[in-house]
Image (tube, rainbow, N blue to C red; front, top):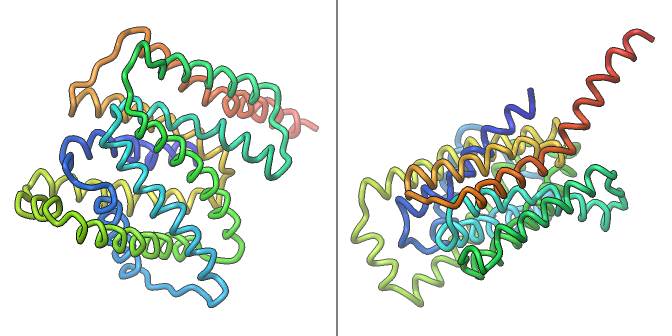
Length: 298
């Protein structure tokens, strides 16, 4: 059941790229990140006020910097430089990076199935992102890799706080602190490039408003609320199983909103990457289901 719930935030996150290009194409990533984080954090704080303990501020600042400020900025760079489907599919590489991270940092060796699936996923991604078959912005690709690492590191930090801090406090204050960092950065950029910011506010439209409501309300307040709540009830790797909804949302929203289309071979590579990202968790779930009746009989 938790995996099904994990698909909900993953779906909304997968629409970020197409919604941003469709409704907020000329907006700077720093400003979008600040608008995405701060209102959602203030909304959650007003709904359920909380204040961290004195010893928790440092780790919350780190979370805000990694999970929100850096990650949100990178996500909007991707949204404005890469096709929606490519962004959504590329982000399902998170389990591979999580596996490598746990191996190097936590000394948890991956199983055979995980290793094979990870290697196959990387091979398929290499074929999909081949410059001879598809032209992709290198800045967007670099932002994707950095965003994936933010997820891996940030999720591990978030999970480590489950025993010492309520998940609502973690969620609220990482959004607030990350949003403040982004707001300061956006303010500096606004001073340096006033014409860009003036044009945004002079040409503000209902399309812009609808995009902001989607990004702030559904992608952030609802999506991150479910994300932090679920991470206290399932492992980081298991949470990524629900990530199947992310690339599907990226592909569908890119097709519907932006008219993106790819060759049948490219779509087959995307499907292969999705399958490989899910295979280890699917096999584990089957083994657990088979083991459960045996334990009951014994």
